[in-house]
Length: 134
Image 1 (cartoon, rainbow, N blue to C red):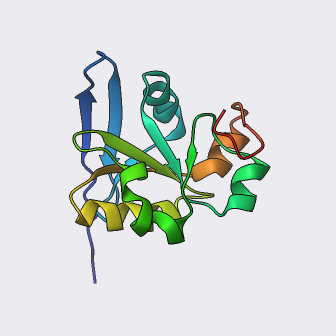
Image 2 (cartoon, rainbow, N blue to C red):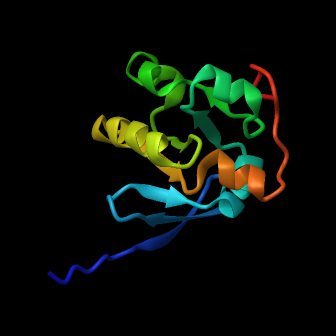
């Protein structure tokens, strides 16, 4: 069977005048790469890390809020704000896609980080250790 995958790419301007480049992945989830994530984080975007606490403390993207995947349903108010985009990250992108699907189904604007924290680390970008976002 021959299947076609359509990938939509769009550019959205934030209220601060910066641009974010997002795409729609195969599962229908909006996605962003780490290069573009760095730009939206610099503009003040919210990043939620859905890995387990021990993974988070061993190294995370600066500014990322720790909300383990199993706690997302009970902590939606910490993860998302109405009218704002929330970027989701995990180790490689699978758990954050699951969290994104859950939150998106409830009307939240969420974007999954392709490659996750591993891609961030491999790129040589700054990593924070410990349980504090910064």
